[in-house]
Structure formats: structure tokens, C-alpha cells
Length: 409
Image (cartoon, rainbow, N blue to C red; front, side, top):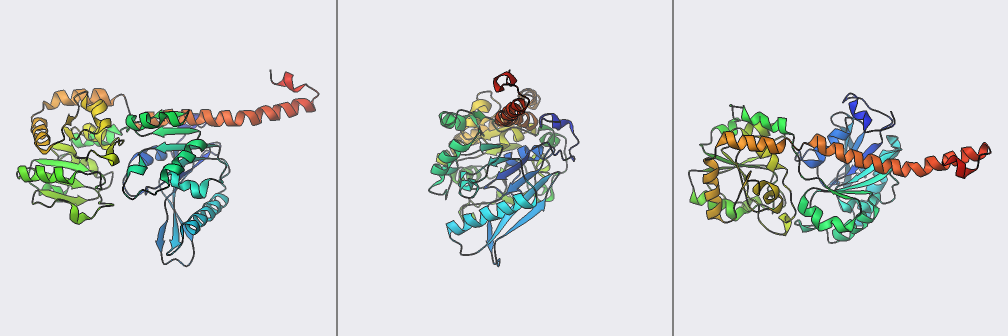
């Protein structure tokens, strides 16, 4: 089998040596929140090997080392473990050396290099992969504590990448002039997983004890959250219970609003989410409208909808288009508007909403998204291999006494 698109028919636990390996360099942790990288790369791992290389962790290590652990199918997670006190140059040099050792030890000869962070160029630019992919899922330069040279690194990555994918329409529109092979792949959905929420009746214990109605959010809780909006809604409607699920990062937890009807339940696994969603009366996207959210395309939007929940969101562009425009999500920004939207959501015709949601979600899935990405990637690899194949044919023809021009016909 010469095509790794064709290899999708093989068993999920089969490793096909004709499929190139994939090395992914990411600013996200594989075990942190299950989102776009996990959905896409776990699908690649049903066919070939994936090495997911995270950012380093620092500790009292005697010397740099690489912790490699096996996940499902053919996927390995590699975490550089570095001693405290290293300079930026030493950190990048150590990461480069550890990655080179991994490539040698695991016999990674033909591979795709897949970026989630341009900052990894500092220790990967020497590699010579079959293809370079930049899956640009966020405008990282707008995030809190973004490295000052991130934009310059991204410009360099655009010059090196064979393919660029964006995580939403707004991000695509902002970057489409920067690369000739850029494609928009908005947040997709594992609909059957979240649709389980529609038929579940037993809530998890930490949520079951909370009075109704439940207004819920799951995801990372960071600077993109509109804490003032949450506080105002909770203050105005003390009978509503706001349930917040997810890790708190990059902000001081003490800065989050604290009221008797706001409940922070911490992070939950991907497998647990449908059970929590099953007990929600309305799902929320209470994002602030600022530079850090200008280009986000929340994966949780279709996940909420697949779970059968009515959804209220602030006016995030990639939620307004298409979900708000299709009346699948209520859009509101001020506390008064947000409260009124929640009240409307609580009164929705459930059967009608589910029919409209299912009609929309039938058009998308992570399987379809990955299938199209795979086709584009395969085209790049074929094109790159073609000159070498032509050259070999020309040499063979010359050895047989055939003019090279004739062998190319």
C-alpha cells in the first residue's frame, strides 16, 4: 500500500510502515484538555506513528532528559525535562539534542513535521521532513504572556510550511494572504460522544447536589473569560446556578468571581463531559470580547449543541458566524442582554432546536476534517517525491541507452 490515505482501512491498532511518521511540536499538553490536536492526531495514530513533543518542564534534573510515554494506538507523548536555571539558548539547544536522539532511537526516517507553536522553530529548523504543516488554531500572539518574538517566528514558519490550516474563519481571513496553501478547518465535532448527554439521567455527584437550573461552561478558564459578566449574571439571578468546569490558567484564581451560586468544579476528562452536560439547562460561552478572543473558534460550541443543550454566547465572531446567524446560538454581550438570552433559551422548543441542530451537525465531523487534511498532506508528499522518482527513472533510462527526454514521456 503506497498511499497513506488508503491505509485508513487498516485496523486501528495496525502500524503501517509505508505511512510516514508524524512529529508534532506543541505548546499544549496532551493530557491537559482534549481538543483539536487530540482529535486530529489520534486519527493519524490509527495509521502511523505520532510523536507529540510538548514544551519542557523544569525541575531538579541532573541533566536534560526526555520522558516518553505511550498513549492509544501508535501515539507517544514526549516531554523534555530540563534542569532549572538554563538560558533560552541552552533550553533550545537541549530540546534540539533530545529531539535528535528521539529520531535516532525510534528510527524516524520519513516523517511529517506538524507545528502548533511557531516558537518550536528555535530547535526544529534543522530538520528535513517530508512536509511541514502549521495548524494555526489560535492567534497566539494575542494571548497573555506571549513571547515577544512570536510574530517573527510565525512569519518564518509561514515561509517554511507546505500547508497552513486555521482553526476558524476569522483566523483564515486574517492570514490567508500570508501563504499560498492555507485552508480553513473550523472546530468540528465528535457528535456521537456528546449526544450521549441527551439520554443520560444520572449526574455526577459534585453536580447533582447543586439546585437547578444549571447554567454550565466547560473549558480552560483564563484571561479570555468575561469574569465581570459572570459576576453580574450571578448577582442578578441568585436562583440560577453557574457551573464552571475546567482548569484555571494564566490568571489568579482569586480574581474569579465568588458567589454562592457560582460553582468551580475543576477539570474533568473528555469522557466525563457528557454526564455533566446532561444536567445543564443552558450551556454558556461567556467570553470577553477583546484581542485574545478576536480569532477564537470555540470547539465547545458544536459540542454543546450535539449534547442537546441550548447555548448562549457573547458575540465571538466565529460563533456569530454561522451559529448565531442560523439561530442555533443566542448572542448577547451586556449582563442584561445575557440574562434575557438565557431566559429565552430556557423557554426554547426543544424538539425543534434538536432537529435544526442535527441537520447542521450532520455536515461536519472530525473524521471528515481529518480526511480532507490528509488528502492535502498526501498531495504535498506525492509532489515532493515526484522529482526524485523522475530523476531515478531518467538515470535508469540513461543506463539502458534511452535518452532522458524519452523516459519522461
